[in-house]
Length: 289
Image (cartoon, rainbow, N blue to C red; front, side, top):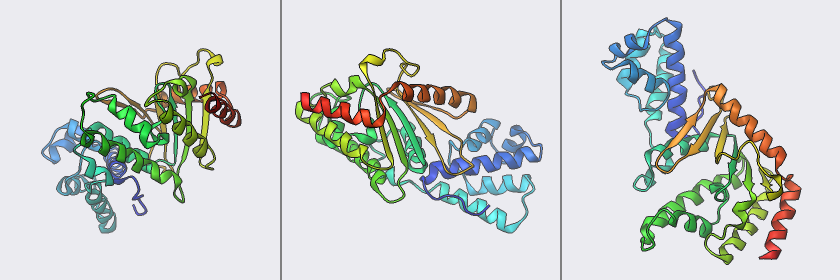
């Protein structure tokens, strides 16, 4: 039970602890209804705990471990410590006043991911945006007279997320962008020039792969909308597909669902320009601006 990752904050720790509790319960042949009764809750509470979608009370975890026959002091201690750490706020907690709850889950997954593959057809990928471009995108969600204090914390959060991709041991980022994004003048000509220059700089990083789907490619399998696939080095975490919506998000982790999006992503990568040709296309667009 030792060696759980400490990267990714409470989100990942909750998922790992939930997975372990589910395995222990199933190994003993105990139903979610029985487990819920043991902790004075319902079967739906057990399901939420096992999916890592709620925090953990140490008393509940302790009672479940007893029910599941976990008597070894070292094993119990490790799991109870994991429960305590799973309730520790992540670094993004300080942005709580501007951060929707459904996005906190994504930030924890993003923090723990070893590989992120994204497809975008409306905006530049958030992890590749400049401050000025991010500011222009974020302002789209506010009235024109919105104050800076409504916008700037969100811009700072986005820049903070980007920082780890230039640090030692950074995860791999593989982004595919529809060419229409490069011609949509968000923020004005100067902002777009700076954004494309930034893409060229990021494309030089060894952990960043950038591809553009050109106009001449026509239709393709991923045309339905943007999505991100997150992969983790920890064997206890399965791949997750993330799709952001206006007021919520979808998180898909069933292998059958993930496989569909993985095939679409692989297809769009084949349809897109190769990374070196993408760089040339970006330079061409920059010269024409």
